[in-house]
Image (cartoon, rainbow, N blue to C red; front, top):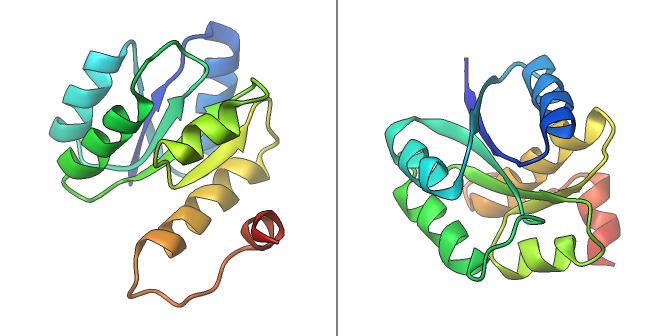
Length: 136
């Protein structure tokens, strides 16, 4: 079973999001803070890393770059958040995809696949409808 890491502060929303990711077939690990996420991203072989960019952090670009570099399997980093500027913050910082909160069950499934397609040049250059709509 592939693993997914989640960095998210809010308890109820985090539990709901974790259950949606688990229903997609991922073994989920919730990290309590940024330091734990960076250590866990190196130690655990994560396929997906969900990072709540609504949390205060000055250097999301540095954090996401570290996650990409230190991940053994070159995990897909997905920014998540509810704030109006969250998509801009996440994607400008280098996240592979973004999922707006609150979200419906299909969003966590579709977005990481889009990110994986965009990230790996060996895969076909096709993208899901959500990514095509965003790029037009």
